Image 1: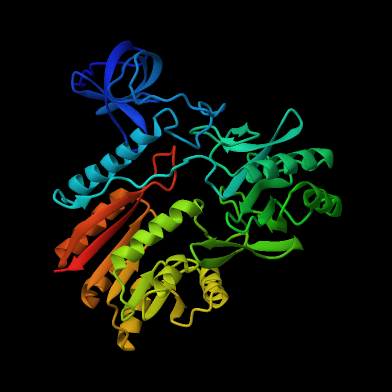
Image 2: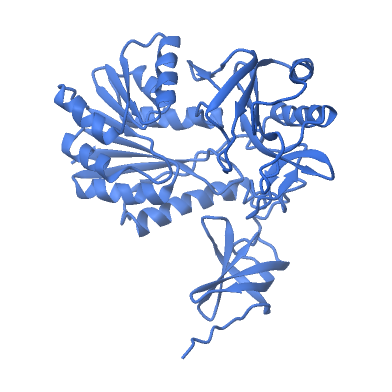
Length: 456
């Protein structure tokens, strides 16, 4: 017999919001049945309309707020309710930081079984706007004109945009300039369904400290008509531009970049600093998008590594060497490993740029390279991991447990996989001493963490 749910599709009802999901939706209960309500906040009484029901939970649309939360804020962004880029602009910034700490606490307890671990308040920004140093926006067409912006939430419809309040102002200006120039010269925007048109994405990068600017035009093929005029006009209209690059992506894919990159004008790299360390950034380099909070994050990792100048450190998932070089300021020697060859080439270049001689970088899977280093006599006192969202490879965790470094510093962009991996390390003889959340992406639900583990 089919289970009778307490609500059905199109029901309209009044509920009290009890919690907030990790995606930023309000949580309401109707006779024990969970409803997720986007844009609703804990403590609010709201009128909703049920739009979908599953066996264990459903989704509803917010119709009207009857009693608003004291933490509700008016989103300053004019396209906030259409764009899917920020999820929680309607929540005050102070409450965002508390919510992110709670998000980390919930998964540490539920997934990691870590109820006693010291969890610090989230480190936020003094000014949580205009922090992003890189904009990468899809390009399309509407009414015969080129448009560029972010995708509407849960769709591939582009919301045309002239400014984004979490982007640096100069990145906004670059997007506006490129749209204007493309329309002037008849450059067609990309049609994803038909795989037609020329301009697929515009990527703008800015060095926060150096003010150097890079413009990347991602095209469907090599052809870019009126190339010289386009370059001249970008140079004339974009202050501080140091590099104009064309990236060619011929594939039917959601991946932004293709394999071929051509420098059209200026340099292959722009530069920026995190703290005292200088980085060369190419079109496809991974470089943190919030440099101010990146320094906060890396300072925390350095603090937890507790280096005296005598330690050997391994940095797994080292990328372009950002954390490795921070660690090299205080370590005897740092070994960095990363699976992406281009990233390791950038890491070596960045070490040279800063005059570091106590760093070695290797291309490969950390779980294979680390045992090889161990066989060569490398004994790590500290291992630092900064994995992608899926967390550490299980083999890597086993490698750490067999190598037994005194300390492990875990930098995470996903609290759920952090909790899972901490549980494994704890079972293998480590104790999680403290976890520090850091707000790298204000007004979104994402939160980064640094955890300190000691060998017991």
